Length: 207
Image 1 (cartoon, rainbow, N blue to C red):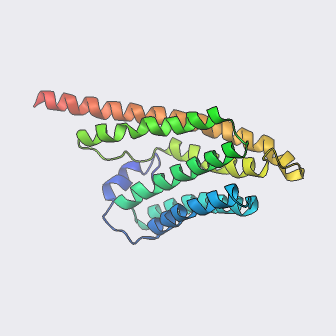
Image 2: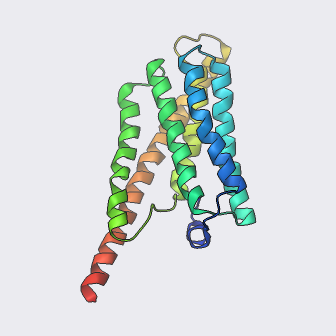
Image 3: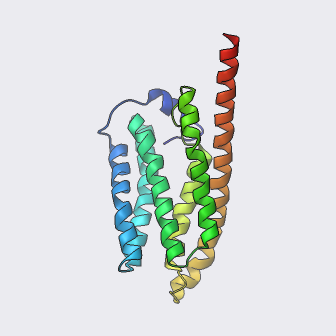
């Protein structure tokens, strides 16, 4: 995990360690994805699914705090953390679309953003780079979406109670803001990739 003040530091100090607390938290988040989908799409245990999603959001915050405080950055963590974030976003989008809680086109826009960014990985690898550190704006977008999704789940169209009335406008507010940040973070990522590729080509031409 990285933000604007630690991206360079975390990347430079990342090690090959596997057994770290942040990696364990990320692995537990990943393990929770199929359980979340089962609860929300199978028996409709929405309360359990919401609690699991909230726990995933909390662990996403704490594994970054632990990594920064105790210097437990690792290359595995740089892969697991964003992978867990994206899988939860993908799983929740799927659940919301199936349960009519989010328009299909909205979900496709967010998924399309990740598909586009996936095509940058072979480009970066060709120029000697791995995946870029997560930008602080991307983390802010993820936090907004992970706050928004439990509210949308609590306000699904088939629910008509006090909680759904309260959470529906809040959920859509966070979803709109989080989606905007998520797309903008994707644009910034593409700008970074373009700058690295152009710098590498310029350096190659000068040698």
